[in-house]
Image 1 (tube, rainbow, N blue to C red):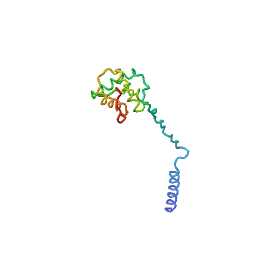
Image 2: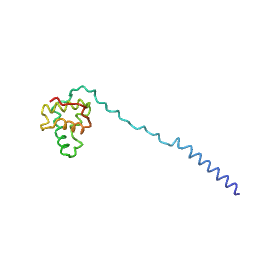
Image 3: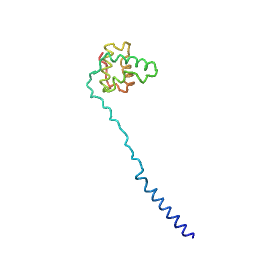
Image 4: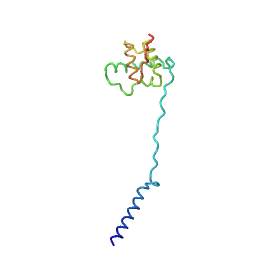
Length: 132
């Protein structure tokens, strides 16, 4: 009787092993591919400002907060204005705002321009000087 039980035990193990190895073909959920957003491609640099200079007045608040080493709130409105611009265009826009004195604050232009650009995820182009 023992060999029959052993044979039955082995046969049952083989059936279970085959079921496990086969997987869940009909009951497995199909994986959904991850949604990858398209990359944000900045517009090519023209060296001109496409933003109304008066709109950049909100950048003075951001610059003051950065200089005071206070946290800049997530809802600040300066960086979204510069978001789609190339680094050079963003620098030109801020220089135009400085030249027109719309920021209403005294600035150390090279340092403050770089601070503000960095805060908005931009880099000041190498050898760039504000035409003031």
